[in-house]
Length: 359
Image (cartoon, rainbow, N blue to C red):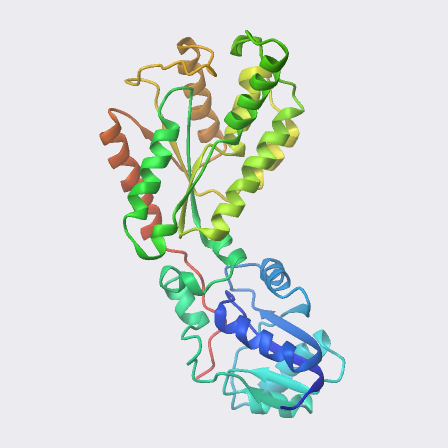
């Protein structure tokens, strides 16, 4: 098997899947150094910077570079070929010894680079997947997507609400509902509320000093809320990477902005910045009416629930977040929530195709 100095893998990689991973690892094994060139056009749905980040994470040992290429594709037009090559050479000016592709244009691309063309799994027998298939049906190709791609495409649903309004119960019920679909859906995850874990630890530390202490004696500092928001976001991101096309979150960083207001008054700039970077798609607000208040030792009282529900509703509307409010008994709330999530999933991912080939 030939060994090459500088190898090149070129493609749109939109979005990268197991076939792309096989192509890159095969090339890396046969080259002293490898450059992966990711090309993007202006009409595509996912920014080039994000796609480069995906490839660099999945392939940290190779050089990954990007180029914007809005030139229509026409494999039979020498002038169009040369226009593309101008883009490619500007991105990869070094001599190339071998070009690795799985495409029919590989031979001509190699010739124009003055390099040997190496074709890898052209019939897609090892990994029967293509970028076109992924864009058309991400769910059908879910198992063949890499972790950062799954995290980017997963539809994230947040359940939030005032104390003792059934947020945890609802998040778990939704998770169970979608897991029962089977297949890739069986890996649907529920992200727990980190703020509760944080609160439990605060109370435990207080009781280690004063055994009879209760929740009313616990106090928060403003600096603790960014810690909670960041950790909540980290847990969400990890679950999205490993889970199904839908992810359920028992609160999120946005909710933490309201909890900061509840305990300390006013907003917190850093918490708001963390929330603004979120990638959630739907918020389900659990109404306090019709739900009995249960004091589990970490709650302040029923009288605060109407205010909290109102603040969540106001902030969700002010920030333009897609929201469905859940009313009535649990069964009614669950049916409303499932309908809202199904509607979100039925909308699909709207991944635009790359520039078409010129006919």
